[in-house]
Amino acid sequence: MIDSNFMKFINKNNRKWLFSAFFLFSSINFTACSLLSQSAKDDKATIDDGRSASELLSDARRALDKGNYETAIKDYETLEARYPLGRFAQQSMLETAYAYYKAEEEDTALDTIDRFMRIYPRSPIFDYALYLRGLVNFNRGTSITDKFFPRSFADLDNVKQKEAFHDFSKLINRYPNSKYVSDAKMRIQHLRNSLSKSEVNVAQYYMKRGAYLAAFNRAEYAIKHYQGSPGVIDALVIKMQASEKLGKKDLAAATRRVIELNFPKRAASL
Image 1 (cartoon, rainbow, N blue to C red):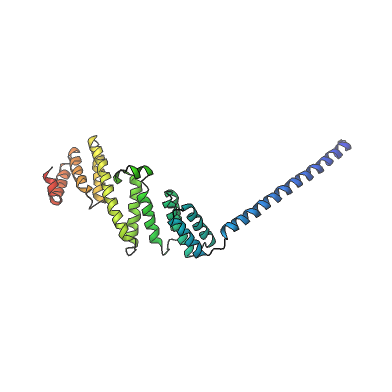
Image 2: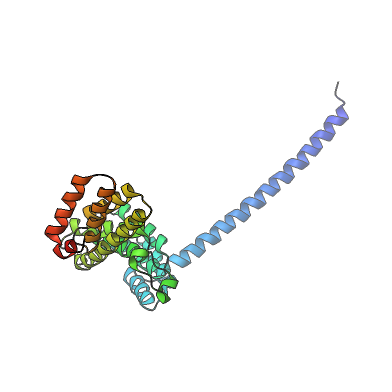
């Protein structure tokens, strides 16, 4: 049988523990509420600073023009938070992406553009989103070192160049009347020349090491995808030479005839 004095001791201590626990919980809850309240006030002060949508947009653009990218991004994001629907949200999101691009935060710029494309697939400024995405990818292969010691564009990251090529091509095909098409076409031609040269460089590397099938495939890819670029001539020569090495005499002869018909001067030197 349990001693009655012992039970009294237990009950007395339980009451003390429960009182302490209740006091502690109340203190924590009060502190948390205070912090949340202060945080809400801070957020409201940050967002609701009295500026209209047009004023926020103007301030952000002025900061962007002056190279104050951090300030510009903050104003654009404030604008988007205050006006999450409509043209201001769309405009501020893309201009935020441009600000990140100018601040050399290309990955964040691309993430912002992709988010825009998911949210606003029918936006009237979707053509600009495609153009901006192409522009970011077009310049994403460069670095600070390249500004002082420029490399050939063909030496830069092919993946990024191909993404830019895809972005600009999509813009031209979907929005042929867009004001950005003219610049996109010039950049695509530059990319076509660069990418074909890059493929030819790789194909030549394979030829020197006796990897004739790999050389043939890279040359064939350049011929198929980059018609009209200077690199196609070299790609045809490599295709012919690789075909001969692989024992494909008929294919080598057919490729030679294509070279003779289209590039007679080059054919004379073979």
